[in-house]
Length: 310
Length: 317
Image (cartoon, rainbow over the protein chains, first blue to last red):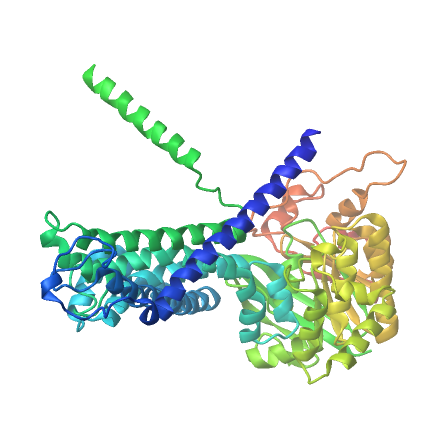
């Protein structure tokens, strides 16, 4: 087989594999959504029912993931908690994607002082360390999952606005934008029909890659007691509740931690796959790349140490 | 003949740097005006200023562009939008760049038609195919169902001309429409544009580097240099009896088959933003004199509306 044909075959294989990967992760994500939607019908126990005689039981046949200090079934609480965690993260990503994109498109399209003003405001938001700023905002608001979502949303929108804005600016220089205007196209039609379809790819990629991070942020705020108010089950606050018993009953922390880990990994890999499909120009983060990077960093550090010793 | 476009003392600058200086021009209805000059002489800027596409950097400092008694520089965006497309059309240099790459050509034609009036799809399709037929574009259905990248460059440019003409504008501005095409397609495009004038009486302003295209198409020729209009007149006057040394040099630098290497013009065109107290061509002109360096040339009228901006050539007439 000639080299070219081999390359072509490899390319096709790669494409097939990406499609397969997308299907696989979509099914996993759909599974998570299914659990989140119909959790109430799956749970073996009432997630709120306390049973102090059964408190702090390790995982067993009757309690798959054990019980917490009030004797509530952890498995049931995690399944119900999926609803809060996943839905609030998805709603949050959808919200900031829409708001951020609208702001960015306005900045890019209108330009001038409007653009400068909004971009300077976004600079202010970007200047603070993300989590510290979110904690401050969530602290000022009343608490509860919505104030946590607002806090995370406030720190996340500038990124979306910037992606959308830079894309619009790149679009603006294309001749066909002028051509469309010269045909007498109205401004909103120029945005909807000519700009939006062209810039949607990078925005979807940003959003897809962000779902995992948003779950982490929300869980993080809940862990600090700034998100969901107990007794509503939420993975972050569940971990927080169990942290004083980490040495005696580690399953209370490990079970929701594992749930967060699995969910974030699934959504991140799904986002990666979507990126591979919509933005093929970006290099893929393969394991090999990571190993190479690590090697480079380590060898650099060794060299530096050597020179220091000498 | 009525005047359709009149430009008076037009000054345009980019970021405060003057690009066009005191351009005066008149275009009659049904006329084809060719604008020639080196790269950077302000030809395209002039077109953009006429149609209001200077973008964020460019600014019209002063002057008037009246189209059909309407001052294009002083009307509202809404009025401008109504004039664009229906009465003014434009063809760009890069074939295919006039079309959004991710939308089918048909939908972009429909959009152009729907911008200005209510029209049902079947009627619109008929009108588009009619236009294609007039321009000699066969297989119109396939074209409308294609994306821009599926058509060749020449085909794209011809379709772009059709798009600019779909609303039957009175004035078509063409910014180097043939520069990116091979010679046989160039000939086709030139013929199509001339057909437009014969069919619809469209006035055409064409900017080009190609003297062959100008000598074939144009009725009037304007020669620009460094943002100045240096010579203007009918095609035969300007091309056969050029008065300005720059026009003469430009014509001498046309390559000819079987001929010797063309002469070229010594020196470089002036740098962006360079200011002259005298004639802008003085640094490269073999007739250059003290007066050329210190005084702006004024307009000299030869016969038949043939005008030249030069201190030197008038004495020779």
